[in-house]
Length: 88
Image 1 (spheres, one colour):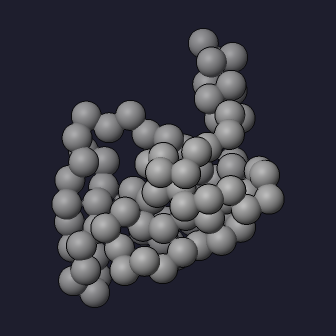
Image 2: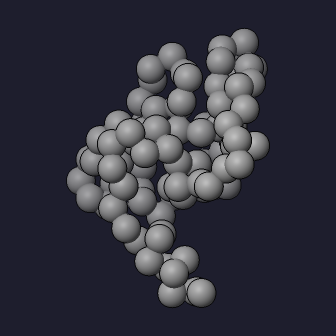
Image 3: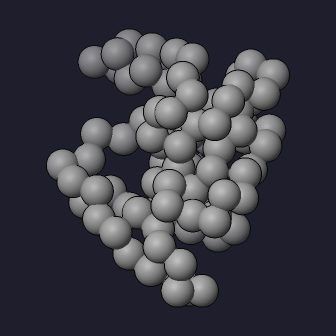
């Protein structure tokens, strides 16, 4: 089972794929869902918050991104009142 998790955390991400960010980044970025915009320089990616204002975080390392398997996606409002999405 550990091999499966290791393989999942190492595979390349595709534009449009939904991801969460590592706990170390949540202080800046929050516990929201993000979408992969593009590869930067593999293994780094450009991501944007799903439902956000379009701001993009470039150069996010693959090890800090996890494709979730949520049962649902919940719409919430962030601290600024903007729409955001989180895994349910």
